[in-house]
Length: 482
Image (cartoon, rainbow, N blue to C red; front, side, top):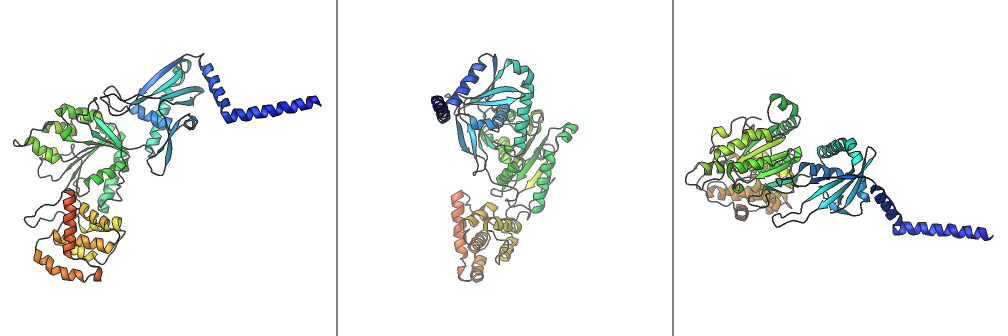
């Protein structure tokens, strides 16, 4: 009887010890201690993957390791992980904390990754870091090459599936610390479906970019760099920047925005900027016509980058060697101010004109901004646009956003703005009475629409005097070689 009681007591004690171990984490600590003691009998080697290379530019391998490690199930078992918002604002993802260890297994070997962070110095604004790989020397020769290829393949699959976070890079100028580019997450929502563009042109651009993505072997066979170059020209507010954002989202490419005024080191500095870009990127140079004029006009301040340096940046030997899997985009307000040598094939493959808003673009804006595909005021808008009055899509879009609660009021504001852009106060006065009767008592006067566009242009610095009737640009976006 005593033996039975003793056995029962022992069972209860063992059960309580088991519960206590689970509740206090002692089993977990014991296993970690056992693993640490076991690793003490092996000789290890440490491999470091820094976030920045020797020239203080982003290390592409670091990015691949980052993607790979955050795809491992073992990240959930790390002692500390950060919860952060993913590319989609509704997604919450796990992210390794600084100075944390994560375990991986490959071909029977156990590997350890350490997320090492360093404090910023006075010359570097951002905190940099590195990943430290701990591997047994007995396993290194057997698996290291295959393991690195495995990381490359997994990260490549994640990027091709759209899981890579896009980034916007801007040249730092005199940023200090040897850093040429600074970056932020690229979250612009623009797509080809949301921008005002003719359906025919939209489909041709998408087809051209899809052909470019599949063209690596073809370009190699031709002995040419795997790149594509676009010229976007037209007045301000016609959607050139939104078009670049749509290209980036369509291709899944990062964006490098080159500000020529910050290129202080001349032609050589411009070349170094190109050297420090990465594949799968769009390199944007805006207002090229202004730069060319300032570089060739004696009365203008001397430009740090020469015209020949700009041409070499567009299609020189360096561009051919460092331009693989890149899209070059140049913007300007007009092609009339630059020479033909700047626009020849080879330097610029595709020319796309972004004119002032026509009726087709207006309907697309009304559909996307107001959810209206047809309206009884549409014929009046078409009639005014046909007279030669022009306004940028950005101005129309802002008027629609400001009056999005009432599609009728929004369209009437646009009509008022279009009349303001016309020539002849008397004609606008005669049309006011006609306009008042279009939609009953809810109609607004032309003067109200004029005041709305005046306020808008003052707000954005777009208000300017007019000396006469402006010529009407082309009614549809024109592409020369697409």
